[in-house]
Image (cartoon, rainbow, N blue to C red):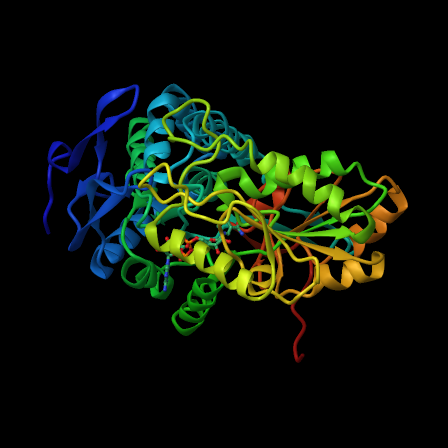
Length: 509
Ligand code: NAD
């Protein structure tokens, strides 16, 4: 086993505005930084296409070491062996350290994921701090129930116990936030963690593990195993001693993980998957305001958002007005270098993601859509940028770009006749993550909200996600919920305890 000192598993990178900083690039298992048994891989700056650093790659054997460490910690220093208030204290300490290092971590997130630095700091990091604090606050509020409805002879109670060792596999679009959404509730519940960040954005998860060590989280409670899906991720999904796997990513990968989990030890599975979220704009709505929410919904994070407002359905008599308003916003999106405080729209994560997005635009044109705005790679950079793009589908064609998740800054706008038609179009999708309705008729808003197949519905707004409100998908957009009390419950299992207060065993039965 190659056991290296922290110093030799650190890389120095140049971060805009901060200068050279050292970041961890190894595996973190049982409180130690280790080299991976797999072949190290490079992570890239998507705004330039240049390599940032090499990161250790965890093999299946490394994953096994991490699981053993997590199991040991679960049985000794964590799980049901530590007071919930102590778990809360340590999670709060981790949140404080993240807040202390907000600038450093935001800068690395911006560099590795291509996010505007201000957004990385004020949204990604700030929300992750808040998420950790939210779950720290819940750690000592986990309660079971009691019932003494048995006439005095018996008492029954429930214990809400941590599930155990959890594998967590996260994507590249919100590397730090997805980390916090997973690690916060798992640690609060008393679970131990084997975390695999995306191979495209592994850096902030590693920095967080360094902060967890500084917070004095016991060794083995949080282990980080960077690597690829087919190697490291699959080893997690198939491991016989992982009790639960929590995954955020694409539908095909979610299905693969479900199968691997079922074929191994039938570990519990929660999945947050993709979407093709419809936004319904009725003629009574304020079309300017609706266009503004669409712009936020589709161009935030350059459209790499599972809830992106990628499918807008507009009542026919306000279609042109709405499209015109949206176009004005497309032309003023703050596209630029992630290191610029003014940038809100950065590059896509990779060359292949950019090419995939451009392919959808080409196919939409061939299928008869009109490009209202954008439609090209942004010519001013050699990074992986695609312009904010609006496709008008005035003839209501069944476009591939209107059906499939693009995960880029491309919105398809289609007209509808009436409420029934709008709901029919909205629900004609294998996805069911989110949806929105814009109308001034509140009865209509509630009626439509009830009828939409979606785990989140926004009324006269778009994209609101809060730590204390559950988030997750209907249909193929997922299984289970994250955030809120529901997010904590998915790391707990319920045990019924029957206490005999005077029942005599009867025999023969
Ligand atoms: P992806 O499915 O390719 O990868 C996600 C993670 O899974 C990565 O860490 C990857 O290494 C790992 N992985 C890949 N193959 C695996 C396998 N066979 N076994 C185990 N792990 C494997 O997704 P992505 O491209 O990183 O992310 C984009 C997708 O994530 C989009 O479809 C998007 O909608 C979805 N997403 C959903 C949510 C949500 O909360 N619903 C949030 C963010 C992203």
